[in-house]
Amino acid sequence: MAPLSDDQATEESDTDTLALPGDGLREGIVDDLRERIGDALIDAHISPNDDLWVRVTTDGWKDTGTALKAAGFDHFCFLSAIDWMPSPYGTGEDDPDAEPKEPDTEIVQGVTGGETRLQVFARLTDLDRHVGITIKADVPDDEPLVDTWTESFAGANWHERECHEMFGIGFVGHPDLRNMYLPTDFEGHPLRKDFPLLARMVKPWPGIVDVEPMPEFDEEEKNDDQKEDESTEGESS
Image 1 (cartoon, rainbow, N blue to C red):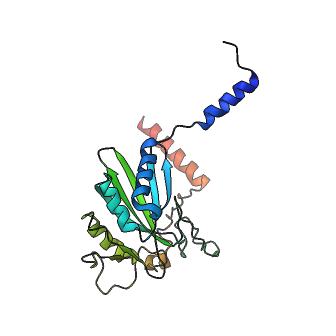
Image 2 (cartoon, one colour; image 1 turned 180 degrees about the vertical axis):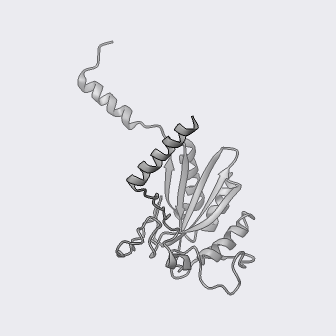
């Protein structure tokens, strides 16, 4: 067989580089979900042979849970929410003695993007195929409501109650959204970034550790202590 020319070798090398290993399992899951829910699937992100995220419309949140359960994702892991708004109180890494700076107000959503400050997300697993999927959906700012998953996954009950209590997101169709941790008449939602925790007012939250300086010794006092030690050792010997 004749050796490859430099041009042929370069072309073959480029082809090999582009032909990266895919993830047929997760690609197939996305295709199947798209067939089941149609345009409700907005975006998907695959980390090959590792993990999978999808973002769906708010209206398609309930149907997505139902569709994934029918597709084999019958193990409910968790459901929660996230507030993408930067905290107006800063972070624990901020220097409390520094001049106050203008708070960052830019909202940047994570993987698969988004259009709202609040998002709900849930994690399901297909135990037979050993694969998991994270589902996300935007929560409208003016009316923070999504449909409940309790009809498909009984375990979502308490997760949705906690989410309602801590983020102020309502779950339409939930049988009982009573508070789990806070008093019934408690005002506000503690896991929203703009909730004014008293601890944040008194000390940066979660706070910067105060390290006490090591005690300082006079050089002369140190030398005197050393001489005394040597003298004591001499007498004892």
